[in-house]
Image (tube, rainbow, N blue to C red; front, side, top):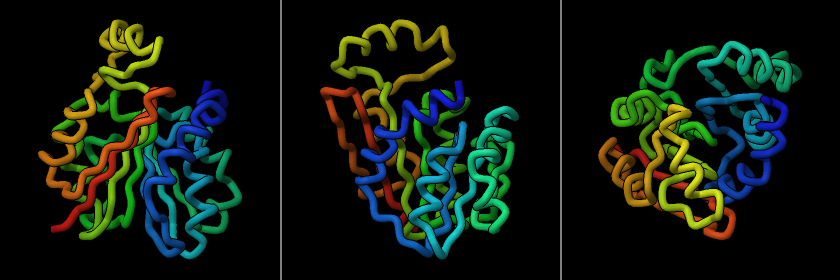
Length: 192
């Protein structure tokens, strides 16, 4: 399943990351790193920085470590087991935090967003990339909305995503959609 996630989310991740600028010196955190493919993409861009990943699942952490073994050995990547609700990083640690196909599983969205806000440097960004959200206009959108609660998912509308970011303290919140594919990208800046 993790291999399928790595492969299946690759185009979505590329589309989402095209909405931001990633500088080579950035410190980046990928929350819900899954099989580690997003970390590998980010590490290729951040040649003078560091990419960290965190995932709640032990098997995801193990897979992500295998995917990124070379960069881990070079101390350019680190992977930790943990929860978005209690990130084990200091305040203002990261230039960029990413969350690809994971926000809808977070246990306490308002509190978890504040935790993400805490670890971002002033001027840093948070980006959420998803192919599942409430109100998406694809054929599969209605099915996802119907089964989301059964799968423990909290789906948000475009406006609810924007409000979530703003309520956590992010400014310059931008929402982009690819309606034909059902893709969503939300970014926000920590200005304080």
